[in-house]
Image 1 (tube, rainbow, N blue to C red):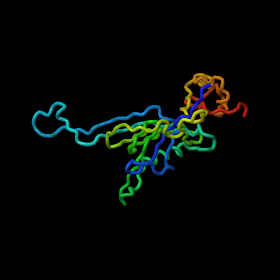
Image 2: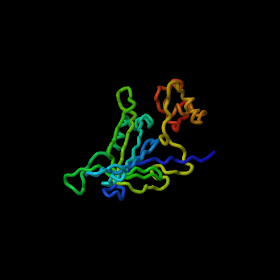
Image 3: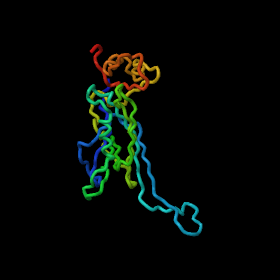
Image 4: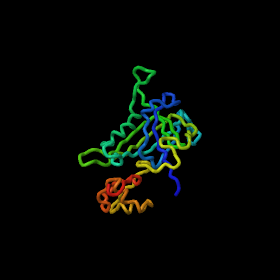
Length: 242
């Protein structure tokens, strides 16, 4: 049987004002689920020169400033996938990400506030910049009104266009470790659609013989009637009957 390796998890890290080194290590955030896509966009600032004459054609455009590079991604957090009692409100997790858009005092000025410099690091992908927008969507609530699942749309930008940054292979939390078994939260959750059964979801993932243990690990009482949109952690198992 092939050995499994622990999945490298993306991180948000705070950098100093010069983007040279990581600071406040306790503020680093390890994502719960790695993003599905990363979108990087580049733009230059150009303008049409003023004045008379024929200004048509590409030669009329002038580069007037530094370019901009932007990274856009979406992160998901779900406290229903955690051990019972560890967290009961998903915002206790997402507030750690919101820290990176919250301005704080500039050490070089008594009055100026600036947002923290941030690095997004996942494997060999590295991007340094400033968080310029953050949108949080609360998607799922407990019967007593506690938000349990949230999606964060995050935009990080740098006011320049530079060569690609590369991190070390496996950089981020949980870098590959040979022989380590899969652990809860290291892969995106499987989501139930209309009419889904747990046995069907588990079989589609190639784990058909383990659906009862997965049901026990996720606390699923009726595996034949999964609520539409319910998330199942296929890495979480428990002995049947316990």
